[in-house]
Image (tube, rainbow, N blue to C red; front, side, top):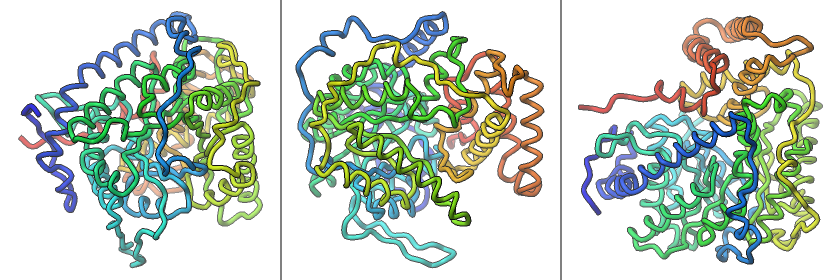
Length: 531
């Protein structure tokens, strides 16, 4: 490997081995090889968005029609990925890693992306936690209860989600430039764990977020090939599941599978980011102004078209079609409300398994048994690759049907409360936050702030009256006053809620919709590197 100038923050205590000289050199090599290409791909995203802003709509690419019509399949999958009926997701903190692996789910997706605030401590400590989990040496003692946590004999298969291509890592500087956060997350995990995982009969398995074009899948494939070659790991050992959570990617599922076919494990319906991406992609299209977030259910025609097309496309190619997230968390003090929430989970999972999905996501361990019971009843085998869904015929227009429903002041207030409180938590180092009986992460906060922007930008009616900047700011002020009263002034300030409210207002009222909330907030997490 070529020598590079690398500067990082020190590792947190107990995680010094994560930043060993060989590991840092490995990541620096990946960064040098692929950072220019990532930069080009992000520029291509911006060019495509300008076309959408000018009135164009996403469509299937005529130049890749041969891939969509061709007879090909992805490579065979390893044994521990053949049954993925329930997958639990969560951040990479130590207690969460243990509880998720012990949850009874088939898969745990350890998330460096939407469920983790990318402080340097969180990221490097998270890598150490996964290092210990792979070797089954991970333990945790709760400092308050003194309860000790350790891995059970049987645990979930581990998948890891690195950050999206757009996020930088300002604390890992190679040759004078910040590194792509995606390569830092992937590279450190792969370097430390790939061989150990293979020796244990598993492998280095990943979820890839927020792809917008099949060329981005091609980039990841080349990253995988290079990483495996450098470490002497057999090509194809890496298996990746791609989240179809952007509107442009929904038109390129075949192409994404094809680009990654030697490393492909499946596609996933990342529903919350998909809603956000639909708003962002069609932000200048006056005919595509969404109703309240609660109205954009999986029964809306555009969401039905997207999920059923995913099942059909995946199964035609021998890849798994994973369902979306159940974000509900138990409501302990209201049995009736809790049962109502769980009924929604059951209905959602029943729809997915009957549509042909091979598995689904949950955000809380209490939902694992509920989701598993439904998939066990309706999917007796390990998966449903035999369900080809030849009945599904989806055209471009079906993926672009604007969801219907009311826009209400209650919906506006929910967006404000969720958006501001999530940003505040993220600024304080928390990326996964229980709010109003749902587990919120960056994706749902993105919906909150982009909906407010969209309603303002298009002068949309909210409860029959156009939403103005003044009306929104008044609602924001009222909600912040209520929150300060509920928390107390000290906690309100310590929790960085005023800073979060200022950011929420700025991005909601800007002339142009910001690409990512996390990009806008990231400078607040950056610590200067030692000179």
